[in-house]
Image 1: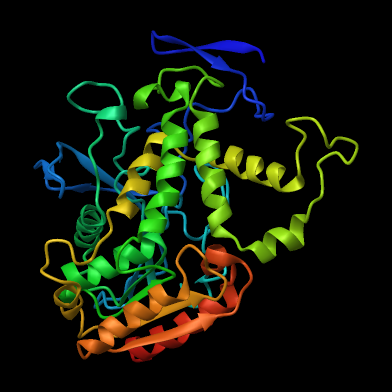
Image 2: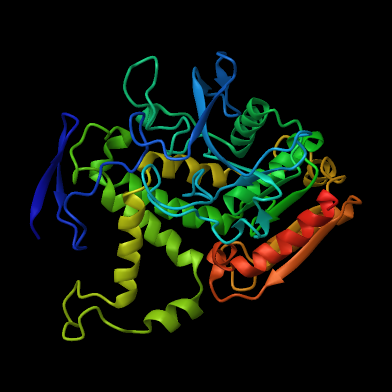
Length: 409
């Protein structure tokens, strides 16, 4: 197998040419940078110029959050809904693709006119998470102390840090209390933390396809993906931003995404869509001849490389592993008791193997055990964990009914 020299930051490493047919000029990062098209982003500073101290002890001297809004805030500021995104999401939860936005809104069909989260009735906000790469402060942002991207020096971020930044955006917008905080997967972790950290700033919560604490199996899947990414020689320990196109950690990030993609869908979907079909039916016995499912995983890997950042993937993936609602709060019961007064809705996807049904049942049972209300519904879908993004009619219907009830209209 031929080898090539990977360089770009002053160092040079031998690397075997990857057998996958990745595009040769993939970007070093898919991060958004100042000077790029803004699209629908707005920006809010965090901390009023004071250093932002993270739960893990790290400090950021300057934090900016990127966010988007849809609809109109009522005069009483009582119709605002915060939507929290999943691992590789961003603030573009609703809308078209175009300048500044590589893809359509990731929750189109659930957010919009007449949808479950109705922009004619609600003021909808989505904030790019701290540690992300689409306008909020993250590893690709310039470190004011050095004048270059944080890269490997970016500190560990927790769900609680992300929620504190979202609260700062709420202050910026003049929102004292959200009508509801809604989100799935990593976004659902943020929803739960909102209920515990700021129960007086939320009227209702809807954590979807998520969990009270990351499980050992979830951490295990994450660890494999993170390791694959970090072992890519082009990752350069996280300091790769000055490399040239095609010389970034695309292979590591694509493989990490492929690992995750397997957990996002169900065996039924893979079998129905790909079976044992080959990319080229004439090629079977070569070591790297590919099945259709391999091509699918490669496609999603490249797609992510073009719109995301490898360091942000590591930071936010680790954030999910650290999720534990009970940490430093005495017990899970003590933590859940703090949000017992909030109406809650949790949804499960029947075929979800990554965040399976018992984990949402545990949310329901924990809230009911402390006297809280939690409605729980199972959405029958073959699409696995991704069902919370794809089953727009069902998810939207349950959210619409819940929001109508808690909103009093």
